[in-house]
Image (cartoon, rainbow over all chains, first blue to last red; front, top):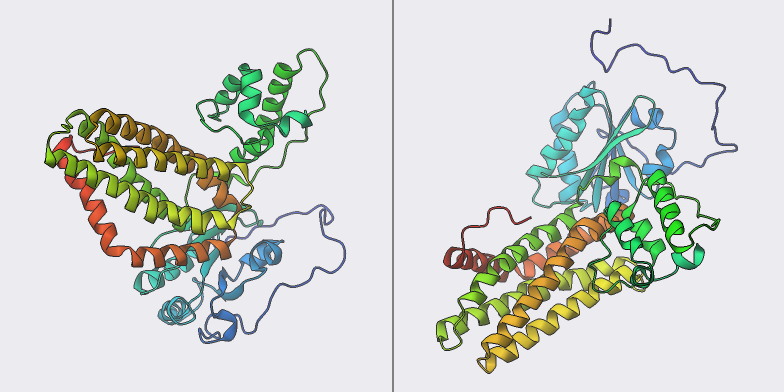
Length: 155
Length: 266
């Protein structure tokens, strides 16, 4: 019987010898440093007018094609809504992205586990409190990296 | 089959009428379209059918245009993910759809206005003048200008679907021009004919945009483009803010005066 938090339940995903693994080196699409939401600043040049991805920490590991599918051409911030502290700082920082960095759009990529919804909640709280609005899209990713849902969020 | 894929749909339906009925089965409503210059290949792409449905549709069309012959069918395209096929509009598209709702409310009350119109009444003439002003200012200068000047510019201007949309706009403008001329000479029949004509063109046009064009555009716009469209639309909204309030409340007043409140027009 399954029990406990779906976000920390033990599971294994058997793979049959690395099928569909790309050959050669796959170039990184990361264009900045740092990336952790506590460490980045909305004043950083790479955020100004940018399309930004706010990714839950686990997403780029679950999703084999994260760099090309979501990161390419965008600035990045990562966070974990379950484990990270001082999340009110996150709300202010995301609001800073909307108002000060004047970002063009925000894509929030989260895992399917319930606790991950918190990251979208932080982004929407920031959008609601922001005097400047931008399109926000949420992407929910399964534990094995499939996109389960993409939808536009409204504040 | 390649030849038919590159043929305007109206031409195909004209030569092979059962193709129209077959398209209807797949909820592709090209038969009533008054323009029909879209190519079959573009129509299939725009409707984003599943590979199975696309294969079955192509086989059905081949059976109609070349009965009993073996025809090489195109490989069905891989469909966009199911998640992005939901009729959920991006914020800039949602803004246009919301504007459509005001225009549709106006169109819904228009028949009552026309029915009760008396060309000898200055009050009735003033009301039609205000209606024409709503169409010219809100529907055309505000809403259609967003589409033609900003949204359509994100796509290849040579696309048949965009040409068809622009032609709809032009046909609507021609009806409104003619209605204005009829009003100037107190010609009640001319006013009625052209306002009915306008309502017919716009209602069909809005349905095409809401159900086909905008979802297709959303599937093809990047996040960068969506963000830029959103910002540019909001800049237009700010410039037009006062007039927008005025015209949207005009529709409400018209409903109060002429018809049962229309709570759900779509």
